[in-house]
Image (cartoon, rainbow, N blue to C red; front, side, top):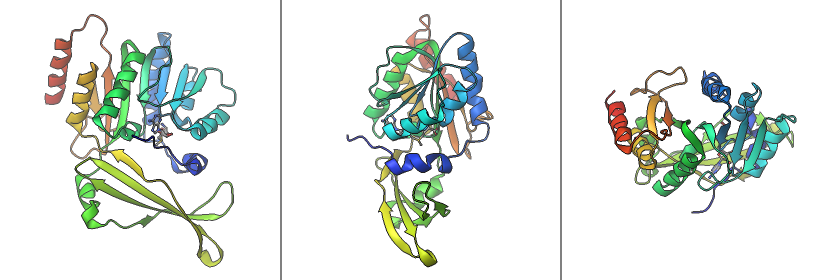
Length: 281
Ligand SMILES: C[S@@+](CC[C@H](N)C(=O)[O-])C[C@H]1O[C@@H](n2cnc3c(N)ncnc32)[C@H](O)[C@@H]1O
């Protein structure tokens, strides 16, 4: 499988485009502070431009941010303004070896969904497992799209491009009209974004058209995720529908997982028991 990466242009406008989810930063801070009090560090996997990692580091906890894209990490480094308790590492979330273990690993804002195949998913979770201290926690924030929407954007429906809010390009100062189109393939559970920027000239006529590399993301269903955790030996503690810790429900648009690496005393049998108990709760 080839590596997909965000386009260079994205690092420039990423922060402009990206928002915090309600309660998101406080949720991560709660677990990060608890780990930090025990002298443990935090790993932010697919950290991007450091949106979450920096907020944690600013409170004094020790953070490592890992990402595949050098341009995203360069933007993160610049924003860190020399903070000494945060480190940026270029690497693939399926195959990294940092030579240290963490009390908390987080994968914010849907980045686990870049894992397109069961092999990608398992490799990523195994890698994280090896980087967790016994008893360490893993938080994964996945999207939980509405089934109606997934039905509407199947290839046979030929979903159209939709225009977003016009913005000013931070480098060129030109007006940009963003357009995007999502297509969902149920066979592979892949939702692919096709993104285009139209540069607008006088009278808002299009002067250039920039097509981005298509961005496929895996739609992860609830029990698929539970099986994945169980397969790599991680114990599911909870699944929330939002960052206020409401239980995951039929109308939840988020699926926020809290899992734990068992300490040495727990057996695989106890883990499977926990899985069943969580499914029924
Ligand atoms: C939606 S951004 C999320 C950034 C950040 N976590 C945040 O919350 O703002 C997704 C990030 O995943 C990274 N990414 C995609 N595939 C990756 C991989 N295989 N390994 C590491 N990072 C990856 C991209 O480079 C990008 O920075």
